[in-house]
Length: 224
Image (cartoon, rainbow, N blue to C red; front, top):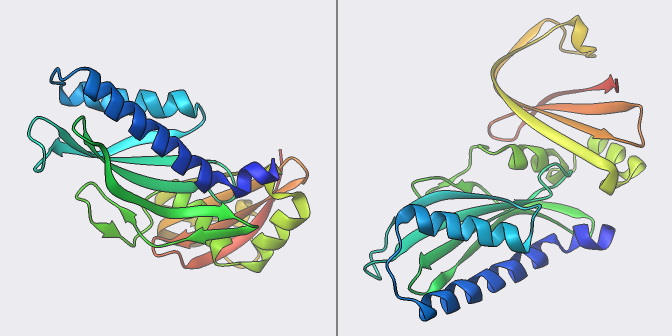
């Protein structure tokens, strides 16, 4: 399982190449025009066929300016969505004319025991946005920053046992019931709350960070 986690990015790229080949061959066998919804459904279904556990979303689709009758598509894939370091990749298609164009961008991945976050995530307008807008990036950021208490928690309990979930709050009021050490009765605005738990631990580790990735607070909670 460790080997699979460390080579997630390689697997995603291989899947991309397989999908590219499939899309190109499929188009060459039939030049029948397809609708926007058909193109979107075909790409999502094909990704999920080759990797059932991958999360696929189409973040932009418009008429191709290069190949009339085709669709310029930006797809985002997330692997290991609830791991301590999800892999987030965007891939660009010009479908059905050429399958993939030439753009594959990696935003985060886990490799050789390290969590890497490479920058902002492409939004619907195709612009790189450095504000954290995805739960997967919120999860990966503290680990990428080598926040030592979290690193210790992950190392102690085994990376592959970690289950992480991130939620965004426009307002989050921390009270004594939160079992915090230094932020009782404090209100935060526009924050990500990331909870890391492990089947090997009797408590979970919680981190609050703002949209730029700055860690505001952290605490532990007993597992219920």
